[in-house]
Length: 187
View (cartoon, rainbow, N blue to C red):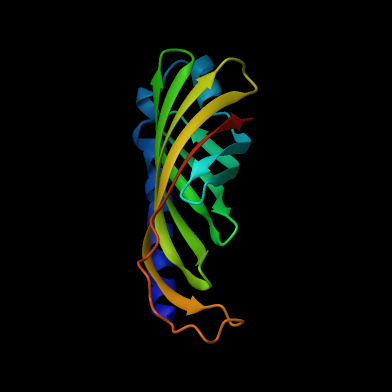
């Protein structure tokens, strides 16, 4: 178990160093200073609501560091569920933005997350990756509207059975692949 945590920590560190290095690599191809200011502005909160594998989905991102050539969401949270089904993930997400004219942006990202999944009195928790694609519409300097599609792809984890239901056999089920489609805003 310690080896998995060490591997995940090393992957996260390498991912962060890669994103930081992109800033220096693309610094000479940056747009004008006014556009750079808008493209490099930190986004403090992003909230989205929508549908997913568990019917209801919520995304919350805190502190998105933006540069003209990459973005990094320091705290990425997503949950989906309804009644006897719950999926929660928390982690970090980084990626590349693609500007489309003055008011539109397409973001592709990849997150490293820790997830908890509960269904039919059985649980799964572990690490996964979360590919995501977002389309943003900017109508003002303060708020952006966003539509996001994302997946959760499990990498490693363990199965369990709810302790209150000991009569259930610990039958493993497939590692959960989760999808969500949400709409919301960023400020």
